[in-house]
Amino acid sequence: MEDIIEKEAENEEPIIEFKNVTKVYTLYKNSREQFKALFFKSKKYKRHKALNGVNFKINKGESVAIIGKNGAGKSTVLKMITGVAFPTSGEVSVKGRVAALLELTAGFVPDMTGRENISFKCYVLGLKESEIKEIEQNVIDFADLGDYIDQPVRTYSSGMKMRLGFAININMNPDILVIDEALSVGDVAFKKKCKAKIREMIKKDITVLYVSHGKDIREICERCIYLQKGTVIFDGGMEETLEKYPEFAK
Image (cartoon, rainbow, N blue to C red; front, side):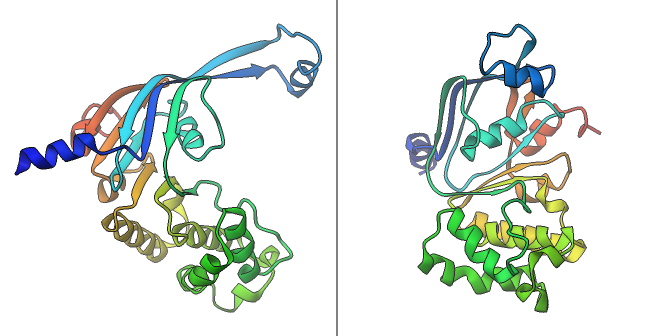
């Protein structure tokens, strides 16, 4: 029976796949040199290889942490999964709707109310009107902003905007949830609420990717990918991977 289950897992088509992915950024000395390069051939730049031949597969329903020092390539991986960046070479395949908890406060219209911004952001994220109506109250309840939900977002604190951004993304019924240090938002009670919601989503077979320097990745993820200088150093079980990462090994 176990052999049959393993064979089914092997034959399962991954929801995310990176095939020999390399990403090279062109870095200019300043914005003036970058502008001049649009019209004239410039030698005043450097090339930075953010990813170097990255390969991995993630199946539906997996909870995977991506770790590594700053500059390891974690954010570049997330940008490619969310469609913000594209590989210089190699292939990235992503199947399904992606909700990204990255820049939580981005895209809000300051003079619109919190309720109006829910509709606006969901529309921008590709949801249909019927889908927006279906999740609106869930977003309002999760954000728990009280009467402020009908006040202009310009009156919100940064923490309130982050709560609303988190509530929108986590309730839009994604196939893939991408989290980049977003669980630092709000107070202790709200963080606990967020983690409980993420665990609930994992039980519903939603794929979760979590980039963090914190040890709370143990609470959410079973698998871990360790990046170093744009290369996958290790990909395996959580504890086994963390033993190979000096910042966690104790």
